[in-house]
Length: 227
Image (cartoon, rainbow, N blue to C red; front, side, top):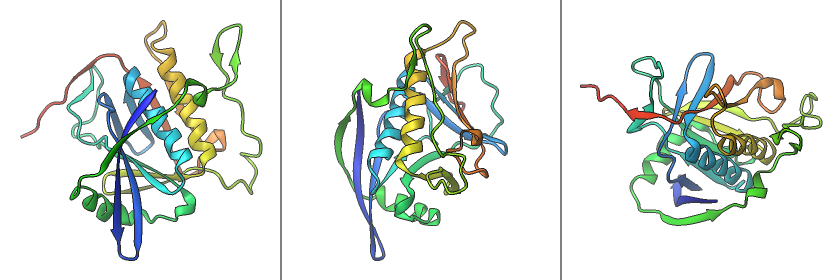
């Protein structure tokens, strides 16, 4: 599959940051509640979400930005609090030691200049998980050592400028990408509900980070405009 991105170089003080803004993701919405993080996606957006997380896994020197706040559509027949707290996503490798507090300034500079657009290509095998051959279902196996006290690869969460800033290593980003791609590959189940979850019990999230629930929704409607 292909993922369109726009590359920006942003200088802030003595630091220069490479920002990869993900294009597409037309039917995708991220909402932050007090207890969990919710994302709704159609099949195409689920595949693009997977590709974006895999891009973050493979781009340890970049900030991968998914602009999800200002949406023209939202899932149909889905009760959302009004006004709901829509969020962007920012994915980055923890080795960058990027302070979330800088994101507002970096994002402001991104909007002032045209970036360089290009396409990143991924193969289906890039997202592969072991499968149950009898039922053709993906098997999300435990990551060795993930629950050990010395494990350093967990994803951490910070919030800044209406953005969920997720920092971690390539391992949890690639693991989540496989789950999201499986969601896109599976499509709706018999009861119409299909989802993928990232939760602290996996050992790949910091304990302080809430559960992240990504749900497939086929039907979307225009987002109401508030006066």
